[in-house]
Length: 178
Image 1 (cartoon, rainbow, N blue to C red):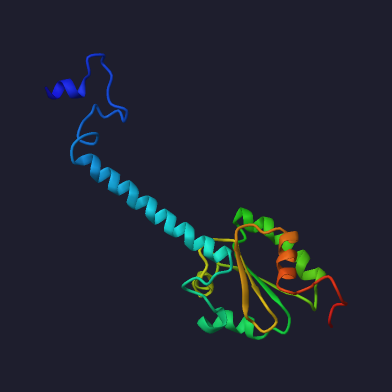
Image 2 (image 1 turned 135 degrees about the vertical axis):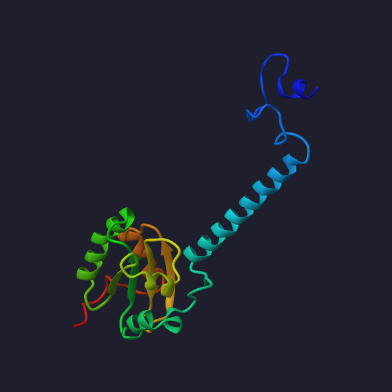
């Protein structure tokens, strides 16, 4: 009778190709179902954390960079103008795409915006200190060193300028400060 389940009369097997064994019937199917649901739940939870970070909501490790680490705090504490920190790596493809944008922002907005790049592959401690999950990550700080926004992934120059404008920082108006 077991052969009747595994090898149907027409010679076909079950949809998963196992021959209709324990994974397709009996208590084994419930274990697989629970495992799949658990994995889906973990993936959804991780996705929600990334969504919170990209929406500017606080994330567990670094709600306030100035309060949580010395190196990052030193960069932020010295500010008198808005700061954009880009955490990435020189060999990461989206990070390479960000490099000319960051250089352009750095040179075009001297005295109005400070731009810092940190290679987290060369400085792995910085990844933890800033509480980032993936690269590139851009962190926007106001002139007082307060974190305003985080973005994960490639971010165009236009989107960066628009984000600054949303926070009341108009980089285009006014002469550069010297």
